[in-house]
Amino acid sequence: MATSSSYPPPPPFYRLYADYQEDAKSAPEPPPPVQGAYPLFGANYTTEDVLPTLEDQGVRQLYPKGPNIDYKKELKALNRDLQLHLLELADVLVERPSQYARRVEDISLIFKNLHHLLNSLRPHQARATLIHILELQIQRRRRPRREEAQRLLKESLQILDGHPN
Image 1 (cartoon, rainbow, N blue to C red):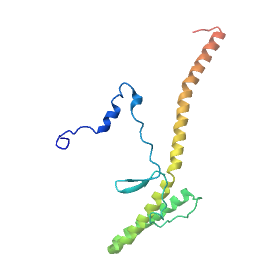
Image 2: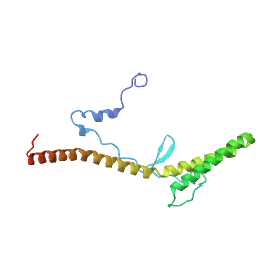
Image 3: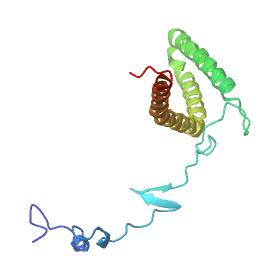
Image 4: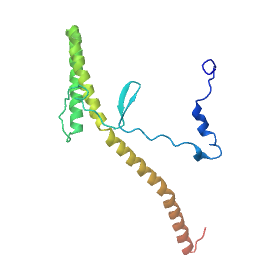
């Protein structure tokens, strides 16, 4: 009957939640979060948030390796290379249209390197954004207290001077 019905019955575990309206704690606990690697739709994923290196992705790295990378300098250098390669591509398309494929591959390599450099800055960006949001929240909470304190001080000074409003 369940296979021919246009609206099949719910799965049998719905009975586990029968007393939820009376007692919210009667429902079973959710399963623990997945740790490590897991398969999803035929692909393997991991819960570790690690940026793979360009070498792991089979892409040649155009900027120096190591932990002490000057991101600003390298991004500017890659941007200049990109501009140069785009001009060369335009020149090749005018002069020798059949030889454009190599230039397009070079531009693709530069874009992949730029993208990887920018993605490596994401954790820093997330931290800075969180710090900024928290500072704004602190300012927003302090402002009403400060204004209230200034109002009370002003009223107190007026009363002491003998000029009540």
